[in-house]
Image 1 (cartoon, rainbow, N blue to C red):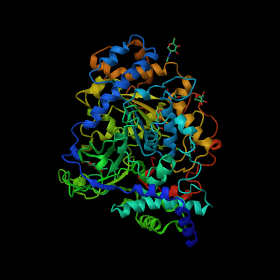
Image 2: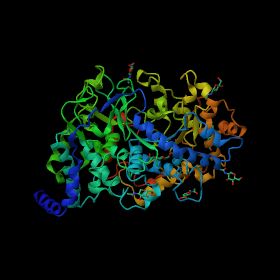
Image 3: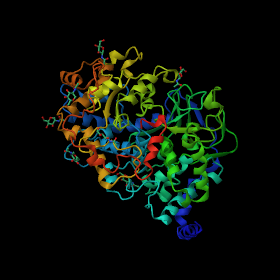
Image 4: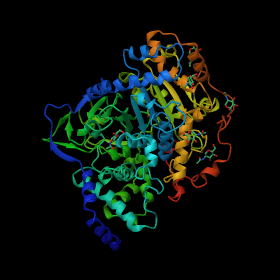
Length: 620
Ligand SMILES: *[C@@H]1O[C@H](CO)[C@@H](O)[C@H](O)[C@H]1NC(C)=O
Ligand SMILES: *[C@@H]1O[C@H](CO)[C@@H](O)[C@H](O)[C@H]1NC(C)=O
Ligand SMILES: *[C@@H]1O[C@H](CO)[C@@H](O)[C@H](O)[C@H]1NC(C)=O
Ligand SMILES: *[C@@H]1O[C@H](CO)[C@@H](O)[C@H](O)[C@H]1NC(C)=O
Ligand SMILES: *[C@@H]1O[C@H](CO)[C@@H](O)[C@H](O)[C@H]1NC(C)=O
Ligand SMILES: *[C@@H]1O[C@H](CO)[C@@H](O)[C@H](O)[C@H]1NC(C)=O
Ligand SMILES: *[C@@H]1O[C@H](CO)[C@@H](O)[C@H](O)[C@H]1NC(C)=O
């Protein structure tokens, strides 16, 4: 061990620059802005989001017009409809959790909407450029975070990059199991960053290590793997595509504990991160704080001292917060090779029972919402602990997009969850549907969703399905039903690749990675347009539906046909299970052929781990 540390020190002496950047992970102190509102009630959109939306709509409106024009919507005056809308038509794309599986399948799905993707088949490419919001949770947040932080790069660019998403080696052992020195250096980099934060007086948890480790895969083009790169910098840096509204607004969600309890469940508070703010629309918090200044000690929304803190919102930490379940895997790392402080941190958390949860939580302390209103759970806590966004079963992040203030017309919901054999069954949507009826769901309306048995047996996990097609059917859920988004649900399924890899598969060969992404592309493009000639047109019908309903414009026959094909008619399936049914010439050969190396899941990182996965994590 001593020898390794000496070698590491020698290495570090030659790598002063890297070391300097690693230290940038520590939050910085400076003077507070004067007359500044750090915390605001969640009664409207952030003023910054409102002005950003104006800029974004100048781009999405023309992009949407040319997109829709290409779709041959007969009898629809596209220009009038889009330009004449009282609120511009807002399209949202959202990507579920599910580790690297969700990130990679989601990447292919995203690429199918991106006009920059090189492909002979036009399909839905261009929809991304016409979208307003891009949401992700857990593995989906890795996708959204990677693309957004890296200058809104395209998936094609990521595939040709040597620095982003090199997943060949496990994140716990990127230099190979036998390369003890390399591993020590890797962990030393992580360690120095996390130690710097600790020495600056901030609480650190395994999520810090996890966020730093992820950054080695996602943010390697930045100095010190983005040790000093914040999520809020997107809104501050005049050069970012986000600043210039050249990309949709990224939304990343995580969870805080349920009111008056120590646990994470259905009643937990859904926390959203935008480049502007952190906070929640849920009644249990109903406030937002300026993300840039999180880390500042606030009492009732006012700084308790003269110093304000910035840079706690490290971009990798935001991604690591949304996916904190994996921090438990640090227990699998060979502790002997680690610097002592990291070893202590891991040991401390490993002996804490999972149910006490701190081991998987990210500390966003001091809590910016301390005493800012009410006496309820979050407001009474000096610490703010956040957990993986999918732990309440809402593994497809919809809550932020369903907010009436956001005026979203249509949500493309990509479900890459693990419900049955690592395929989704719609459970995530059912959870969000049901949550509208508990106090935490106040003010939210979610269209009726089929039960999971229906999702699977009516092929809604094998092909896309539209939910909430008729606003007039939603009047029992919302008084202004034409503002409840229509949902386009798109589930992970195989075409050219068995994309149901284990959530705990931590390394992907280049072929595996490309196979996952290509399959995702085929899911959204309906096998590159070979399954249904009308698919793109039908998506167009879904996009314009709410605006037509608000204006009282009758649906065209073409769109009616589309809706009879893609809308759920409200009937539940009650017969026997039909098992996996992917139809449409999906892969007919055994999954083992494709996944022979990873079916067990965690691979060399102790497959028995899967047996000890807590019940809460079963659906990832
Ligand atoms: C629209 O119609 C043109 C001409 O018939 C056809 O070439 C094109 O493929 C159609 N586009 C879509 C998306 O259906
Ligand atoms: C679909 O298009 C993608 C991208 O061009 C390509 O890689 C893939 O092989 C195509 N798949 C099929 C089934 O044609
Ligand atoms: C970011 O992307 C834009 C548009 O592709 C490009 O012009 C610019 O050079 C890129 N900036 C960086 C720092 O890569
Ligand atoms: C959620 O809260 C409601 C009422 O506040 C309660 O009835 C229900 O049991 C809670 N659910 C869970 C999972 O704690
Ligand atoms: C909408 O309402 C009609 C009439 O009540 C009903 O027949 C239909 O099944 C409903 N559709 C959905 C999706 O619930
Ligand atoms: C589901 O797909 C299978 C295979 O394509 C088909 O045989 C079956 O009729 C479909 N079921 C429904 C309800 O569409
Ligand atoms: C993937 O799905 C196939 C068939 O649906 C199943 O046989 C296989 O076990 C699944 N793989 C994993 C890793 O769950």
